Length: 439
Ligand code: 5AD
Ligand code: SF4
Image 1 (cartoon, rainbow, N blue to C red):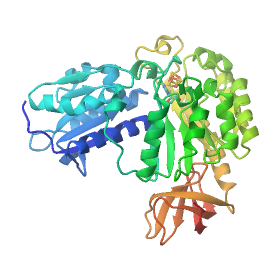
Image 2 (tube, rainbow, N blue to C red):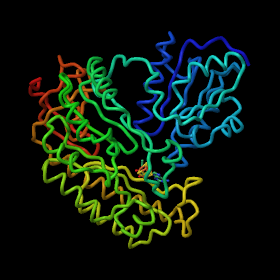
Image 3 (cartoon, helix red, strand yellow):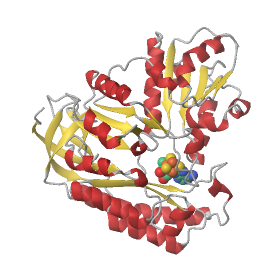
Image 4 (cartoon, rainbow, N blue to C red):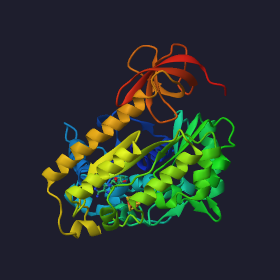
């Protein structure tokens, strides 16, 4: 097939924030080539599906999406499958879905414009190289940003949790360099960002020589105009003393820590190869709380890992009650091809997983609701990020990453304002605008 070169693009992201960051960089690349964004997939000349392989459901969604891209008149856009499904399944994708023109892994997407040109010459292209961090040097400058921006500082994972595909799809842990990151953070702030969330599959494994993530956070703290810093996702074993201390003395570092634990049972943590115990996890939270008493915790949980007994699951519930998470993500275990856990005996029946997930989520909702309720009547700073449904309403985030709906005529996205919380639910808060916070 030979096509005119595409003029419009649409990037659809699945999965984690790392993909959101990559998707933004792809869009910037297409824009730099003179292409314009399409308002919806159906109208785009080029559609990139930036995929996630973490659980089976996420991976399967891609194939149904590809099927829907064929237009009524029988034509179709140029279709690129990017991200972790591309890396994991490679050429298999175009065998299963022949309408796919490009398969590109998460480390090779800087080559997309060339790949699109090759499709124009009638070729089909697969690029699954994992060349380290080459792509960042080849991407165009950052352009207009949302109030809250993402910055990938680290990619890959060396931990090899036995259930997880990430070490295979994103490769080994690798950190971007100090100067490059400080420069990109400044560029994001110049382009309008008030908050930066540092991203990595193992963001707190970031290092540059002697420097750890705590030192990078201290350097970014000095950027004028940057008001808030966050980071995710972290591994308990990489919570260095320097990073914990940063929670105590960097005011811009928001009092919120997403630290996955996965299970409350030491036996299961061992089978997962998590290399931390229930107690060592809780001790880390205690150390962070000691330097930042108002810190809120979030976590990830997997129920139904192979061999998980009722007693193991009860241990997870008791850990949840002990920590009292402000937010959490919980998943049914999904066997992933090529991971050690997929071949373990004693896979848990889906009905048991369903029942455990329901009980776990019920507990998490109780804790999250209690956390939100406790903020009612208090005054907090909110970074306004997007319009709400009502006229004059804006939605922003509290320091604890709660969504806050504020009726605030005259205010703009990007403002940080003092808000009195008047009402709460499990997922969001309502507040009344009091005043603009000091810059
Ligand atoms: N099955 C279910 N959940 C998984 N996660 C990672 N791999 C799997 C899997 N095979 C979850 C973990 C991780 C989050 C990003 O996704 O909780 O922290
Ligand atoms: Fe996957 Fe474990 Fe690495 Fe997280 S730390 S990306 S769960 S292997």
